[in-house]
Image (cartoon, rainbow over all chains, first blue to last red; front, top):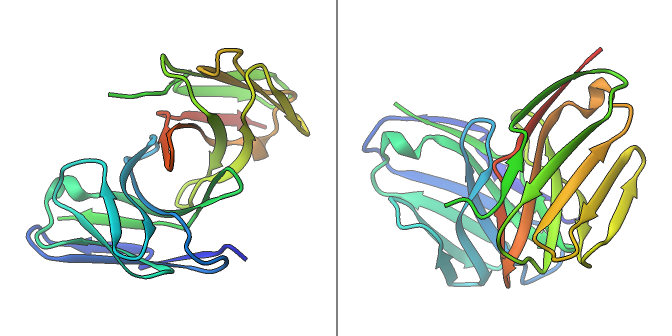
Length: 110
Length: 110
């Protein structure tokens, strides 16, 4: 199984509050893991990817950070949320030439 | 900057009609994937194409990768309401990085 677990499914947070989204994966060890953000009904923007524990590559300068404290755990964080951080956040792993995605977290910053 | 452009952005057709969705880029990709996404869920991988000129069929869906590996198309024959969703293409541009197109939202009316 290459299942990806994301939580929470939905989140409403005030501007300026911190954020922590967690993603855990099952299956083969040392997976390549990714965080994407999706605007409503549109394409996905790559935020971060990780090829191993403690290894994070950032694609877009922004208000977010990522960490990989364990092989199968990938965390997306922010110290102070902005309105523009609202969106649908998806965790993914590389598998069979493409991605397997989690079910996503809908974040609304108010 | 969008590496991959999809067209059309929106498509509303009657059940039984045929349709084609396009994914174009000025960049060469080592592989290209097509995904289908339903509201509130993560995208699901449909197919991966690797070789220029490659054609793959998945029941009523036909996928083609351009000879120069810069573009791709998805053709659906005799569309059904169950085909409704957001169709996304994604190109592998650099190792470990996939960039997504802006998506085509398909609505098949019964």
